[in-house]
Amino acid sequence: FCTPCLQECLKPKKPVCGVCRSSLSPGSRALDLEKQIETTEATCNGCNKKMYLSKMRSHVASCSKYQNYIMEGVKAVTKEPLHNTRDFPNRFTFPCPYCSEKNFDQEGLVEHCKALHSMDAKQVVCPICASMPWGDPNYRSANFMEHLQQRHRFSYDTFVDYDADEDDMMAQALMRSLRDK
Image 1 (spheres, rainbow, N blue to C red):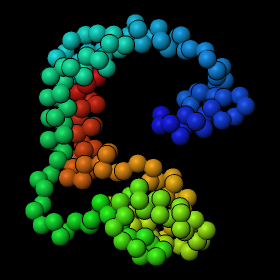
Image 2 (cartoon, rainbow, N blue to C red):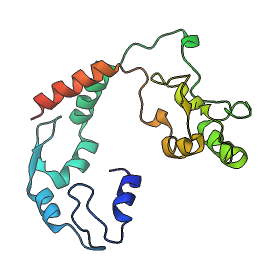
Image 3 (cartoon, helix red, strand yellow):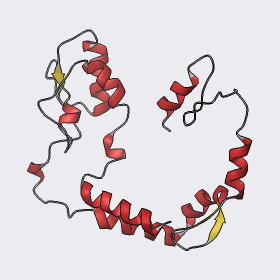
Image 4 (spheres, rainbow, N blue to C red):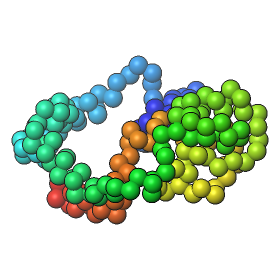
């Protein structure tokens, strides 16, 4: 779960589990889940060594064969980068959709709009979304300020490989899910 989703589960007077919606007691540990993690064995996808789930995270962080396994998957879905950079929109600096001031990074655009345009209700195109491969340069956000705060809390560059082919990624994930059983 991401932090905002967990916070939503903890907001009600009686907090609930994000999975099963059962009541949560502050400060109480999920002992049954801890025990299950401590006693369930799994196999490393890199070196095929068996270990308890509780040890898996630290193991894969140092297992060179696991790192190779991950890189094989990345290479399988990564396209050769195109050399003509003019075909790509600029994903590093953006203009303000309200006043057209230029050269904001994502964080700077969010701060600029909060400071100068928080009361502007005009429907505008989000320049960050429009620069994404899946972005629609004609889509006007009904509430741009809310959109900025919900969608652009982090940089897409942190999580997205723009050179990876989405269909290849899906096929690779399906293939690995069948192989990794």
